Image 1: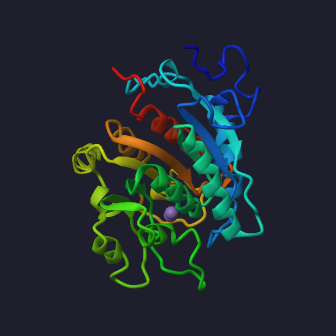
Image 2 (image 1 turned 180 degrees about the horizontal axis):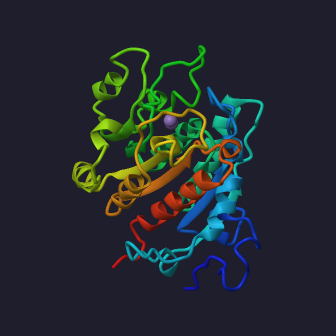
Length: 314
Ligand code: MN
Ligand code: MN
């Protein structure tokens, strides 16, 4: 089997060549792929700073720095799986509800090819339709959710669909295996002291940012793996889970967040789980003049790829 390889920086300057994730080949559908990268240029679900519609494009641009082998974990994703970038979901940028339907249909098609989707956001609304498609394929999924926010509002401005409501909708629709849901990095000011209790009431495990401060998260991830076992697991990584010192290019900023290395420990710590998909959301390039937030997002998506079940690891 000849697996697709990222275009090497020794064959074509990193500032040149195709703007696909990791400069992988692009194709129209997920046919024949084990894993696909997908962009969702959506930011009409955001409640504060917009700009995440530019996320996929910027993540792809910054991903040109990535090389194929993971020097820390030994993972060699392009030695054992077929990966390509299948482009962007053609959302309707004037209609959030229609966009949710378009996204769900797009992922249903991806999943008919038994392909694992790794998504470049886009605002966090997009996880709701992805989880709808996941449920139809896998049943309710376990979830590793990194975020400053629980995203479990019932409504925002009277709307049921927004970037602060996806996990409430997911529970309403029975998309999650609630006792295997971990929300990591939650913090900031609230509307009420009980803001995170709704999550706990559903059976979610909430790990606040303060509980993570000054620590390695490897022990936490051991616990996550033992509680989730072999259940189908989705990873949803909101970049605002990390501290704005590391990831300023996002829309809804909270201080006191996780570090880059804690974020990497979380994603690397998902290796061994039965991961069925993942996303990296809420990067807003207009607030990311250095490109570092998008670079970080590209690296975290690469780490998700390296953590997938059939990837070669030592
Ligand atoms: Mn958030
Ligand atoms: Mn979020």
